Image 1 (cartoon, rainbow, N blue to C red):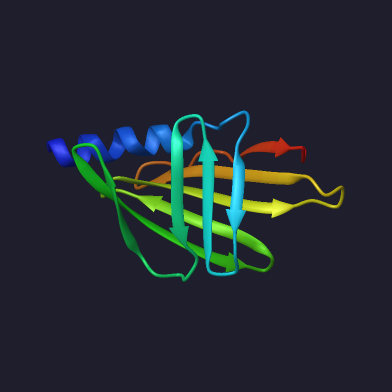
Image 2 (image 1 turned 90 degrees about the vertical axis):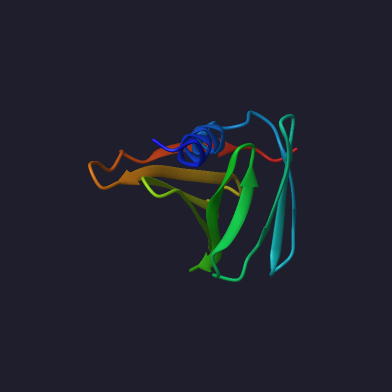
Length: 115
């Protein structure tokens, strides 16, 4: 594995970790997640962008999908798919799974209460 791909895989592993607490600042066209590990800023335009990570970069695409924010983070070997939505009780629900040529993980969910 090339060093750039190893860096991309490490970044996907970090993005797959779910923060216990975070703050969201959002508009219809951009979103920021502020958490203890730092701040992540994304445009919500459905276009693929490069996200620099230490030692390389990963691709990211964020778009609205029927009231949910769908984010796709990818390297050459695998993708992390996240979906953010509000449930009927007003809680934020994060659903995510990993895809690659060899496998597709089962979706995992995290539910957040508002403060």
